[in-house]
Length: 115
Image 1 (cartoon, one colour):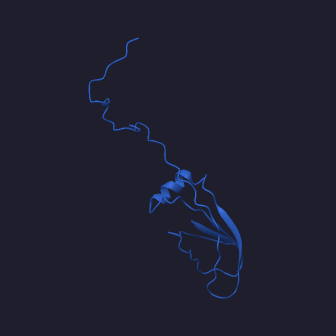
Image 2 (tube, rainbow, N blue to C red):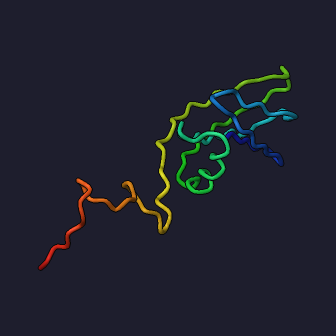
Image 3 (cartoon, rainbow, N blue to C red):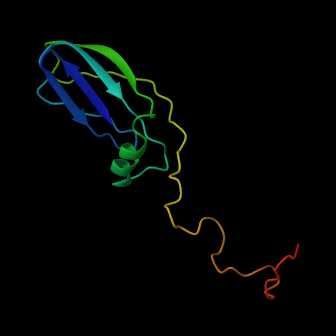
């Protein structure tokens, strides 16, 4: 996610696969451009859910940028580190890890321990 803000204006653009973000109708002047990278495991529409669940801990990288009156297209680079993926916790009532079959190794009947 890439955002910029200047005096009385802001825009948000989604950049996919490291492609450049393109902002339109930007008046000359000083701006702040911010980038919030997602882990490589986050793709497509899952980005919305991921941002909702983990957006408060994702790093944001910001940089002041001066937009000149010309040329019509200008570029700014912002170095970022791709964050590690944060897995969602298991949903309540989910079986958790394992096959879910309840079978014991060897397939035999379960035995209760007596104490």
